[in-house]
Length: 203
Image (cartoon, rainbow, N blue to C red; front, side, top):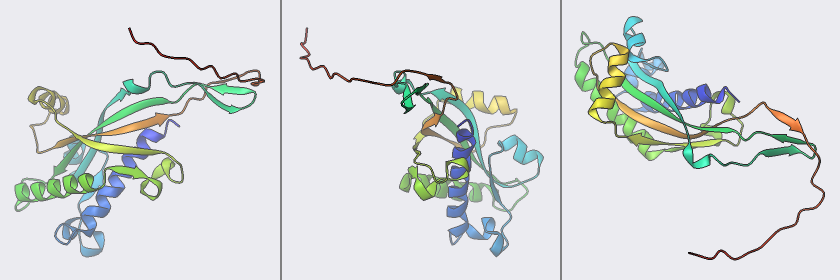
């Protein structure tokens, strides 16, 4: 479904929120039950600053097609129907701890939050089953996250687009996310399937 993009964002945000709220040190900042007011949000850092909110920005800034699945076959949901294969995409997130400079020990807090985020996604890089949130909940979908190393030029381009000075941040990729097609067509059922065997001969 087209809602799977946001469902991945919801999944990542919910996972990081739970890890930060349960941390003995950072829970005081993120857990509302302990008086914490920091949030984990899909808003970008500029939006968090405008709203005067502190916490973590989990911002989806780029979507690219997965080149390894360009030749996925058409699906056959029924004997008289074929459907276009899902669109496989990779989602690139900029994850940014955001603490106002006026807050005491803001730089230290941002580094502690970043360390917890990276530790959490290193220990739990695969998401499936009960991990999933939003419209992915209860489905058989799964995805993995991995850290990306952006060049100085790439980082500068991202922060220039936000019209903000660079802040401590890290990029993660979530893959593979499938956007299901709505296009299907009537077709004749398969009557006979004849498997063909052969020998692949090298040059």
